[in-house]
Length: 173
Image (tube, rainbow, N blue to C red; front, top):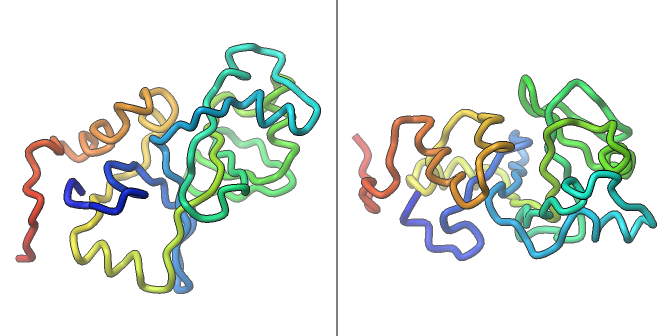
């Protein structure tokens, strides 16, 4: 929501990958870093065959464990460490997905992020009840084919909402 003042989360789009009684884990989808995918691959003595793929940005997935990598991707491909997070979306955290993407036979749509956003037990629910977050369904079009700088407004538009018209102070009916 527009009233989120925490610098880590102001105007962010977060895809919730895991949510349960112990808490939640999500990836910020609209904060590209200065680092490219090829820079990550270079640390593995590899590079992308396709220069466009190599130039893809690495996203700041959140303020927790910024050295831990996550690949949010489409398709039915599974890797050594993959888990389905939505009907058409999977998160993989193993090296094999990175190498498959580099070699050109990985998932067609992907977003690579370092770090994640995390919430303890009940914390996210409390924040939602306090109107800190606007919840929308996941849309691969917004995640993978919308420019990072436009994802915040595009995500809200899924619900027919224009963020600029939201009142920063929301009430409960």
